[in-house]
Amino acid sequence: MYIQFQSSETNDPPLKTFLFYGTDYQCYLSRTESSVWKLYVQKTDQNDHIGVLRCHVPMYELNNVLITWTNLQVENLPEGSVAAFGNEVHYGTFHNHGNISLNTSGSGYFLKDSTGYQYPGLYDNGGLWIGATQAAARHHRGATYISTGHSGSAGHPTAYVSVPNASNNGASTYGLYHSGNYTSIPTATTAKAGLMSGADKLKLDRMKAGGIVGGTLVAKPGGATSAKIVALSTMNKTFNTSFTTTSVAGRIHVLASNGDAIANPAHINGVSFNYNDNYWYAVFDRSVQGSIRINWIAICLTAIQ
Image 1 (tube, helix red, strand yellow):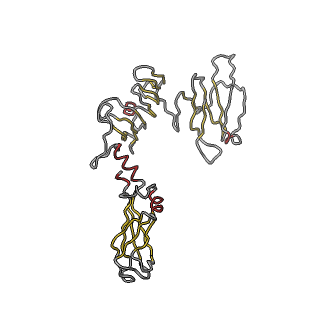
Image 2: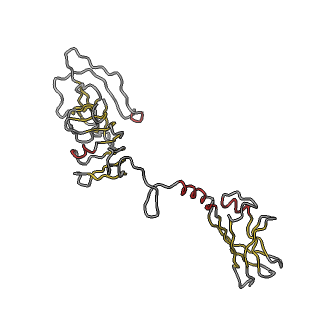
Image 3: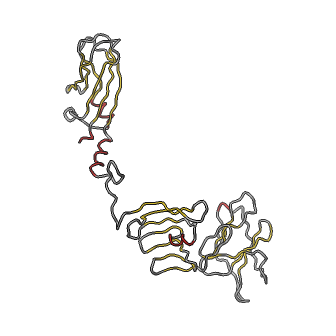
């Protein structure tokens, strides 16, 4: 038996759930006064004795619930007594769809009642339903259910959720649908979504280490015709690569320009990689005295591997 009261800031909350599992022992609850509920169990014979084998109260409610055990008997139930319901949790106003039984043939294992309402269970199409089935939703509009698996015909869902509409007189279904009998999702194209191909995944993985970075620096060539920009070790750390002096060829490209031609009119003719010290150098069109600002970008092309 399960008894639950609604969440409330008072010490006299209304009843929310009252149900039993298994044998129906004709249990009833009655609110006799504020904050006091009495539980009645019907005797089938004058010599019957009612025994409680176990009683569980949540730890967080131990100081809020007082249970008094009695063996008093009454001839008639108090007016307004509420009967426990079986195999289904009821909220608020109690509803009874009908006698509940276990379906064990045809469609799988699940609970159903005499009105045709079906409850969570396993179905023979391999799906697991949570909530009412689609068929039950047609009879009990406003039902919410989740399903996996499909019936094997085009247009049927593989996984979907039905959500009641605002008027609670119908439902909208959202989910994934297949176009035929177990057809696979196609590979994505530039015009249509789909799965990523193995070749595209390889390109993506390689692009993770690539990219474009840039920076600016002020160099003092001291009359030289070139100046250091950035080291190979810095680029490997930036791009998460491990290129060597020889393997970096064609993989990392550095471009540079004069960042302040008024301060220094020298032109940067290009960028050279020095294999002796593993640095990229800006190469000027003349000997440069004083300072010169160098703006640069580096492009890592690992994605072409």
